[in-house]
Each structure stands twice: as C-alpha cells, then as structure tokens.
Image 1 (tube, rainbow, N blue to C red):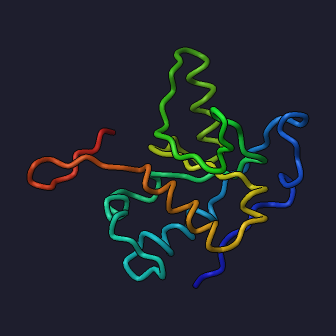
Image 2: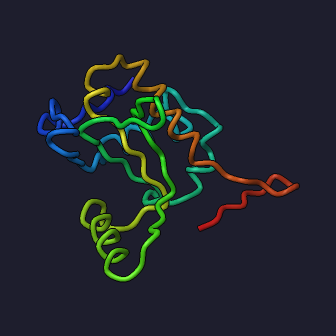
Image 3: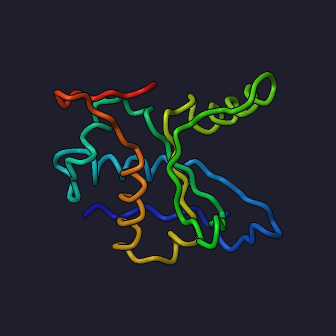
Length: 151
C-alpha cells in the first residue's frame, strides 16, 4: 500500500484551548484518498465511493487541524462537511477568500482531520477515520438509481 501521509510538524503538539487552532491544507492526503479509496485500482478501493469519482478533483479538499474538539461528550477526530457559508456580505467574502487561499477554489466538501490523532494512530485507524469521513460525502438516488446531487 502507498505510504499514508502524516501531518506537518508545525501543527503538532499545540493545545487548541491555549494556542487556538491551526489549520493546514493537506493536498497529500487528498491525493492519497483518491489513489487508495476512489480509484478502481486503489488498494482499498470501495465502490461505495464511486459517486465521488464522477466529479472533478476539486469536489472535496482536506485540512489538517491542530487538534480535535468536543461535541456533546465526544471527542471529534475528523469531520466531513458540505461547504456552506451561513453568512453574507463581508463575512461570506472573508470565508470564501480563506478557501481560495488554501485550495485555489471553494470545494463542495471539506474533510478536516485532527493532526495530533493522525500522527499517533495506527495505519488501520487512520484508514478507518478517512473512510468514515468519505461516507459523509453521500448522494441521493432517484428510483432508477441515478445520482441526485445538489450543487
């Protein structure tokens, strides 16, 4: 299997509650995801993700975060979200600008991974986390099985 990517050293060991969060674009993780899970010749290819391959490479992007966060009573180590800006005016413009600075465009989906966890976990745990997040890039189908994707 292609060696999995590891987070950059500069965001490891930070304490989000004291240092705030740092984020780094992770194009190496995105490439690894495509090569490993989405491409039909990937070692962990999963046809459940075929709908992702129907879109161009800018459909989703990946970020490293310097730590996880607590939601409810659980520690969140990864998150996949449909990119939506619930703001207008300068707030929206500022948020879109950040995406363009990181990725050169605004993706449809964003996968964020806890860098510290990913640096410490096993290869199997890393693969499980990434694949779990990929399942959040879902698709609805019509009665004939055709994809219905809101864009």
